[in-house]
Length: 368
Image 1 (cartoon, one colour):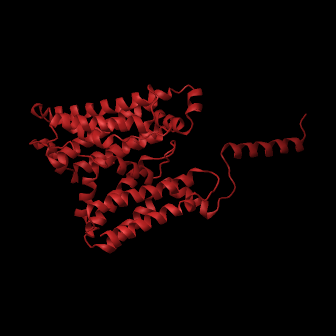
Image 2 (tube, rainbow, N blue to C red):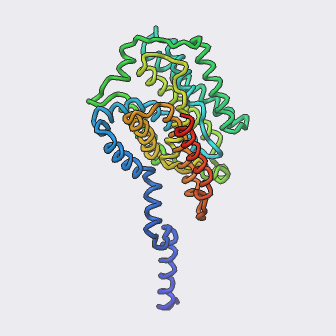
Image 3 (cartoon, rainbow, N blue to C red):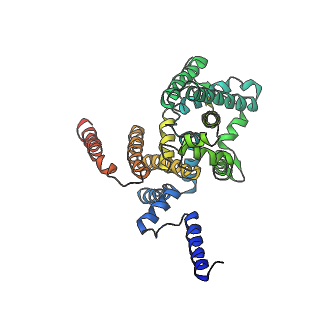
């Protein structure tokens, strides 16, 4: 028969086990709390700081017209960034370098069905994007190619398709319904913004609330453990590349609507901006960590950086340099966050940062 002392001891042990099961941790420092908050919200503090800076440097920045135009124009980037997020989350170096040219090629394919009406244009563009995504997925999943190589090959193929179908000449379109997708309003909100918000919301809901989303995090975090648990890892990786291609096709439709043109050169550089937006939004390039909400914040940051530079009359070529610098710094910081043991990874990058600074001084102080 158990004594009172043994019963008390059992209660203490049960309490300890319960706390352990709930993931009880020692009291976190203010720095650890700040890091967790930053990880959960992506670069939201950076977005707020950027808005403050933009408001200071230009009175035209924080106006309804300017913000609405920025969000509307950046809608294609937002769409492909969502697909890029899913690919990066899948792990094993997952990345899609083809999204920019797939946008253009999908728009060109869709433009070939302009005589059949707007729905045929949209459907053809989406199918073309999904096809290119499937090519990427097959290259990674079945042929065992590195995502970098597979998507770089598709990048080249898609650009060639766009040039072949148009003879490197833009196709002018005159479809009122297509123009509505770029300039129309739904409940007073520009249609491109509505489309992107819906895609962001659905994407976040899928990641946070569905088996697919939870399993994708598991695949990206440790695909071997996921496979041992019975997950079809290949099917998940195939799916994210197809979705990325599909969203690139939809982005191509929006880009075509904004320009009233199917241009085979459209989308140049979008792949870098999409990757930058995803990383700025808090995703880890190693996979398994990131959110669609964070990506949305990253897209806004990239779009507003470009807008601020425009408002202060910085030439477009400098935008590319700034984008590259953002990628370098954010990836370096994210690489430090990724390791549980603190290191001096960012400090080790000082020679690189100094080299970039010297290059900027030479470029603008000597060569120009």
